Image 1 (cartoon, rainbow, N blue to C red):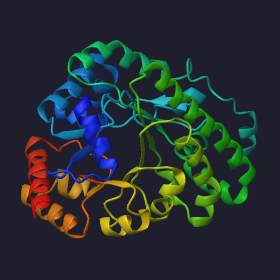
Image 2: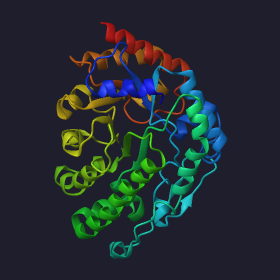
Image 3: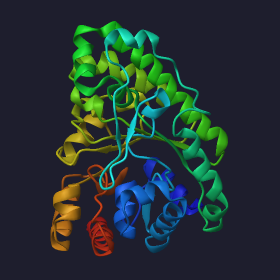
Length: 346
């Protein structure tokens, strides 16, 4: 983000009403690969393609807040390989990894990784470091430290089914696992801040908290997430959870979150009611059915309906209700910006 864009984001979080209504999107590898018409594996592994794609987006659409901005990541395998997880790289499609914990008893022997040396993390740091001069020459700075959340990482290490079953059958083991993954996330975010002093925000991507009920949320998710968002003194504390988010929305203030990206399946008025007026909402256009597959008229109509649900348009960034789809291109981006501007002027 440029200094002007970062200031604009802080003004939104402070509750200032902007005209036109701000537009922003959470974007990662699949969207950038679609923008550049390259294979996802090439975007993730070719440093030049990564840089050119990011510079292309911020240069062509300066009115849009691209979040988190110049994000060096390898999708869902960004973090588990630090614990020894085997990576699987399909020629087409998303990279994934295999569990490393064959049994709950193995959690007791799980060692905490060194975020400075282990897995793919040094490659993530190096990619950004190599291109800071080009990023800053374009007028931008690295603003966010980013990580998947402790439940998400833990579920990849143990296996998703075993992870959720263990909350009820092996709660001590799951608490031990989350203690390790929570400290890992904190260490990883702190290292990014150390290496890139311009960082003033954190992004945590934690969908797995959306798959548990209130009791398990408060026991397993809330303590870890609260620790993470309190671990750095930053202006923006950004949570992405586009699984079920009604329980999450009720606890955003307690966790310390001030920017929330949530599922399009929840009406924005309901999320506003649950989250309160102090959290900025990033949403909630259906990514697939409207942003990718819908017409420009569908985009305009959905945004008009969404805005119409809210009496107060402060602390709102018009966006997708989740990640931005690969085939969301220039004409649709322009349609979103135009519709947001019209909605704000009514």
